[in-house]
Length: 502
Image: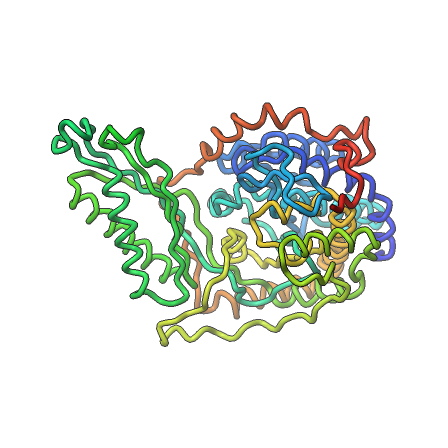
């Protein structure tokens, strides 16, 4: 059956390429993935999946379901992209398609095509072999804002799910197990309200909201010396006033508070709230805040991860062409990182990390966040990293989009779909694997740590985020949407000879 899955997925190379290139061309920011959501649900609906749209009050969220009974396997991957990351694919130096526009500068255009290819192959095997089970597909909306998966959990999306298989782009095959290196996070926007006045003629009559923002930021920058080394606190000023001769009556600052666990994240949040109140008192302004996103640190299921790694070992890395390697080395040269090209060997599976020593005041140092962490605490979850990106990119940058509508991404997605499909088949045909996954989840992972959402009862998804940016750029981007009826690949449509070396 696994050999049959491999053959089926190989036969879907063209379909996968079209999906990858199409989503790349849409280039939509979080909460505004309108074209992406419409496109993916249309494919799944045509293949017999039942679609629930607007999940958890999020317009671009959906759950696509096929099959019946247990086990229930949920396949997820993110679909949003990065601000100002527009980039011509296959061009190994900075070459925006549209200057200042968003683009897939991480590679979120590839994960859902991977999951769809895997799901369609497994669906055919289930129908032929009369295997019982349910497949669910769902998108990570606004992952770059860590803004939706906690709401999915609250809405009960994973209530009856047996195993979650998540997919995230990488530059090699990897699957983590146990506590990951992710940090937890809350994303909070503080809005200060003061009083306007003529900044030259009567400044004493004003109360500057911008002063409050700056005082809060100064407070945090002094406080950094006195928090754990592993803490991460960063911000952007989203509203700094209107013009210099008007005392700013309104100003806002957006903070990310990252830490190793729920309690330490909450401690940073409490400190931040106190600083905001103090800044308001110092400036005679008032302050309100709202939560824009949150994420628990992930904890990934060991039995499922070990099974997935066996399938990674069977599939192996794609066979890269000379052109693929030339593109990779040219980008690495441009980025001034070692010119190692694309990965040619699958790394050993890392053992679950040991528990952190929180008594030393340090905690784990650094690490990004992903709201798949919330999902990992309500059902056994693993994340498959698959090889569609070029090693050495800075992340969240145009450079990470260079490969994402090229043969590198297409080959990586096909290889990743094979691993995902094989792991799904193991879950469907080996009830003991599901039992082992839940035994680990109940008796190891959640034995001493219980999930508490960062969401408060009245928190709602920040569906307005990025709307203004997409309203500005979407009309310019639409003429560049991929048209597979006229062009074999997106590179062909853009007139790019692969690889476009200097």
